[in-house]
Image 1 (cartoon, one colour):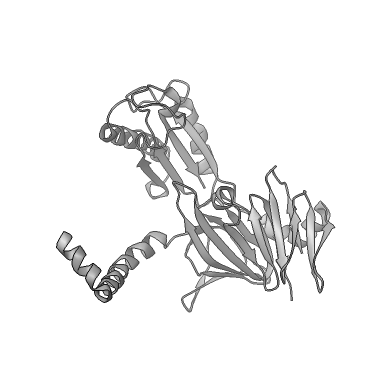
Image 2 (tube, each protein chain N blue to C red):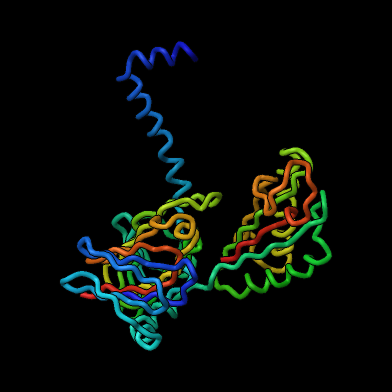
Length: 171
Length: 158
């Protein structure tokens, strides 16, 4: 009845029926429902493909996240990050109905207000670069989070290159 | 301000009415914010969506809402990406109800309950299940699955 696969280390699934429960935490572990409650069994790739092939074939492309970095205090890419925008574009262009969320961030140097503006400007730079390459504007939302979501936790007023970034979620 | 508060404390009935009035005002805003919970990314063959008593054609790009029931025909299949990055895809002759979806993108806290009433379903869990074990469930007419960050398939056959 149920077949987990391609599991990570924390992956698990509980199957409950009429108050009885089994835990599935191994690849291709399965459970069938029976009058006496769920019964565990070992499934395999062939059974999954024959019973669930069409459902699996309809699985959407996985969401992908990119991170691009910026020069301190500015809305310009670092030299290393500048060429990466082409990969972001390719990922978006390959999807039939993409939606893209662009979230700008700053390090903790400067006021909240200044960083809110800067983070939004960074996100807009990415959005405009994608639109310039042909992504429809309505597919890309850009927001700024200022210094609220640090990638690397620091005290206030700390210049930290890894926090000066834009995260791009492509779905 | 303090006078109003005292008045409310002395008259609990009035306070209840006020609370009810505030709830009514808030409801439309919350609904609007929560309206869009996912999107159809893949649709093959016959796919429809039941929403508030109406039957809509399920096409690629369509945005989904809480309480939508997604159905596929004998030649149909559908793939959905939810706002928490969960992926749901159903094979032919399936009925999938998106019963509950609450998601805070900042904290990843939320709740996601679906019911596969018929057919086959493949699931890749997303941020809700990763953040809180037990926050995502998939039910079938006879069983309930609790999801802790995983990929799985489930079927509900008569």
